[in-house]
Amino acid sequence: MNKKKTLSDKPERLDYWLLGAALLLACFGLIMVLSASGIMAERFFDDKYLFFRKQAIFLCAGTFMMYLCSRLPKAIFYNLVYIWLMGAFVLLMLSDFTPLSVAAGGAKRWIAFGPIRIQPLEFCKPALVLYLAYFFSRKQERIRSFSIGFLPPFAITGALCLLLMLQPDFGGSVFLCMILFFMSLVGGTRISYLLTSLLFAGGAGYLLITSSPYRLKRMTAFMDPFKSAQNEGYQLVQSLYAFGSGNVFGQGLGAGKQKLFFLPEAHNDFIMAVVGEELGFIGVTFVMVVIGFLLWRGFKIALAQENLQDRFTAYGMTIMLGLGFVLNLAVVMGTVPPKGVPMPFVSYGGSSLLISFIAIGILLNLSRGKV
Picture 1 (cartoon, rainbow, N blue to C red):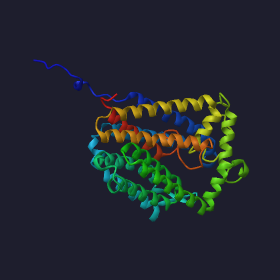
Picture 2: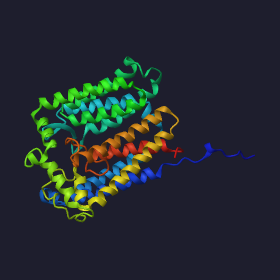
Picture 3: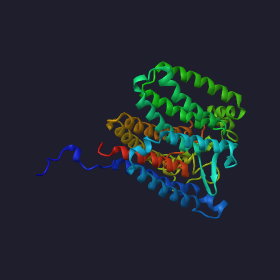
Picture 4: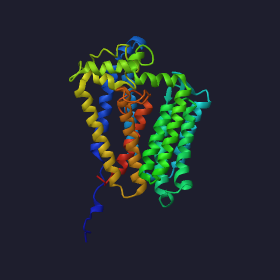
């Protein structure tokens, strides 16, 4: 006798809308990397397609990792939370204290394993999200206490930030603190504790900025970039010129001028300035609509979860991506102080692209039967 089918017998399905949005952004980014880096790569490396090829390889590797993360049992992520967290600490220590670190721009933010370079900060982000999701879901009964609900997650995040500051990477530390703040906000931490932490963090940030001539100059340049247009404000000024010359429809794909050795990091952190110049208001709006749609699907998946750890994990991964999107756009448009934040899926770089796809893979894993 056949059993009557129930809703629980429904075949599992992924959130293909989320998958489509992520792949659309990544493919768009691949095109823009070619446009932004082609001339520079041809001049300095005699290979117009060098960065395009590398980004295509990163995209394939990221897609594979996304598929893997969408199929693995959740226990792989949840039961090894402290292993992932320890891995993040090890990577930061390798960057801070060993010859494997690679210095660039006066900071040691990369690790080289032969021809492969990775950025430890990017791997700290999902490790911290998984830890905080585990912590807030397991400690709900005592989450409002200071010793149990406040100190452990703030101590762990503080230790990661301390290692980042040794590189130094002030912006990376701020990013991790923002993840902690938003996770704590929904996790149940007392608002009074969060507000007090914000005051202390603001004071510490002020001291760090005023005690470093380099950071102070960058902050001054942010306030009035055109006053130091040939020095600290140069990159932001060129970015604003790019957006301004794009108008509504842009100069045309590949026809931008700022990437011709005027705008530094045109294919990296400031790739959205190239989008603005070449594709105009329409192109930037397209990217922002896709980003908004992707984040909506991520939060929808989080709200659909019945298990508290699943819900916090989905929320944290979405917040991690959302902060990357928002901070990158804010920096290139001059609304927050300059900081090297890559645009997820769009900027050139293997570490950022791989972690972005891993976040999507985890979201897809949690979306099964929930959308």
